[in-house]
Picture 1 (cartoon, rainbow, N blue to C red):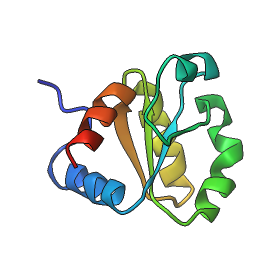
Picture 2 (cartoon, rainbow, N blue to C red):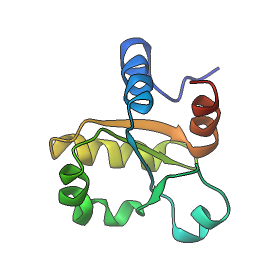
Picture 3 (cartoon, rainbow, N blue to C red):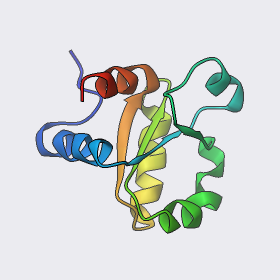
Picture 4 (spheres, rainbow, N blue to C red):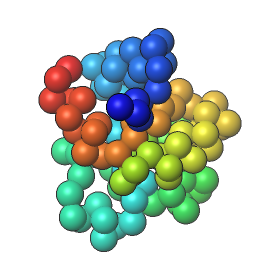
Length: 103
């Protein structure tokens, strides 16, 4: 089975960040988000991440990105990391939701 959260240490770091109040950002379109999402997550479509980096950085918390499959969330995490934010690719919102249920 493919591990969409990453491997080893990075996955554990993401779990710790989630346990300690990381922000969850869903980068799908608003229509996709309305069809289902992780409770408490924010919807910032991938095309808007660049303009929202300062807002995310100002929150002073790690950010876990999710989407439908992990492609867009990976891109968002890379953009955020480049801007100095502790960021993780949480994979699909459904997988992330399952992970959160087991924390």
